[in-house]
Image 1 (spheres, one colour):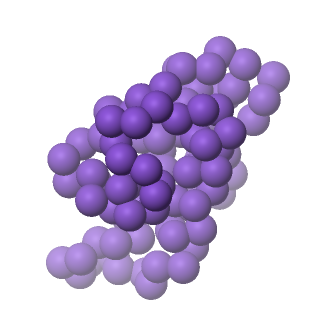
Image 2 (cartoon, rainbow, N blue to C red):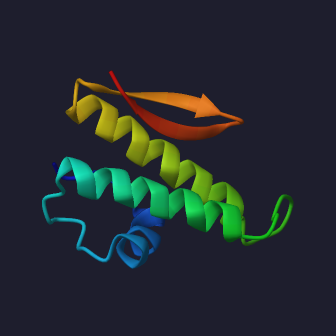
Image 3 (cartoon, helix red, strand yellow):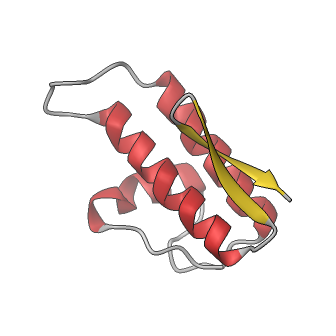
Length: 90
């Protein structure tokens, strides 16, 4: 599968994914990518009300990726645990 990421998230996506945006991702790669994004979200400092917005940006990217993975693979669905998207297999 290929991801469609908004322009404001592309640089972060390329840094976290270790692959280019136009490359194909397997299901395992997509799950690993989402876990890397969530790890980055957990490591980033609280940034509410600041200009950087790193934590919120990571969460938004995680939601975008999780939504696209669940749309591409019908046996996978997204559940929110404490506001963080988690992929579950049916």
